[in-house]
Length: 510
Image (cartoon, rainbow, N blue to C red; front, side):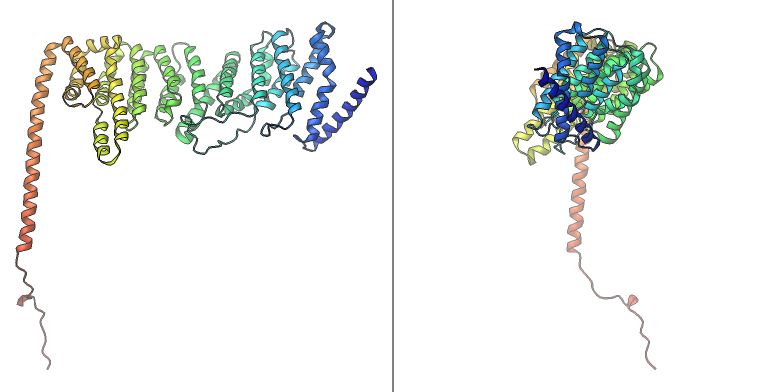
């Protein structure tokens, strides 16, 4: 048995030399590279068994040496585009990665200074890569399934190892900052554009751990996230990891010290608010709204610029986005202070009145009634009724109702015309019932003002009808004049003779 092992040892050693020679000739991924990997594993198999079965017989220096060798062994990459290629090598690497995860989790004193660069080298060799373009050029994240990473069986273990490394009790920040630098973080942020949600979820946790442990990298990370968002809003409108980055920022914002720095306020106004205007808002709106509300809980004076910014970016033609905006406005109103509410109540409730009345619905409904099928008509009416319904649900919120009641003399005057008109003219009985409840609430709040607004609305309505009638009569009279003019032009006599005064003078010949 001993002779057999020695024979295998020397054969493996020779093939390792050949494998290194092949790697120098850029034969990576070739059969020579695979043989090198197999024999490298075989060469260290006995030491692995000794370490994991009889740990007490391995000295600390041998542990470190074996750990480094296994890290280097896991730097070999495999081609997962071919599912049947190098199956044995892939399985060996997966087993080795599992051993590394167990070792760094259970072991104490394993993170010596010498292994830090080897760990980062192994992680970099596996996760840093050029992300492939989307297989579908018209990829829609809301409709299409993402393309999953083929090498995930190995990548998952590498990310798991990375997290255990960062969370280890033996992790030393002063050594870690030498290998986890700005370049490493930049490459990590680029990976957030991966289509695979599993990878983005790991990246989110990893970046959050790095932000928490390395104080010197915090400003740099925030700046690079800003750059990603600005490029996403104003240039590409495509980045898969916006939601995950916003989740990280939600935790970061929650930890901001008071008073807020100017750079943090500028980030809110110049970066977070413009994110509302992107078409694919639904993919990350929940995380974005959370970040905005976190800022307002930190500093109430930011409420006015935030609300005015939302009104500036309010969607004009996309009803689904309007529903999302209304939901975010309600979250803001839940944390708003009375002094700030007074500042924004007029422009805000003018927009809410427009949402309740949904003027776009009236135009689109009449157009579609004549040019589209009944199915499409019902689809659009459903969408626009959702906008009105979502706006009217504000009156079911007790805190918002208390704010409205304190300022009913302003809000009732803004909302009453739209509500009264809908109660008489709207086609949807659900909306009409909600409007009746709101009008009833207004009447209970301030019956005197309610009566005045009712009388004023009816008077204005009569004047408007009178103006409409006069306008119709004017157009009718203009049409009659036009018809009369055409008839006179047809019956008028035509004279083709040339007047004498206009005849050209002729000169007689001599």
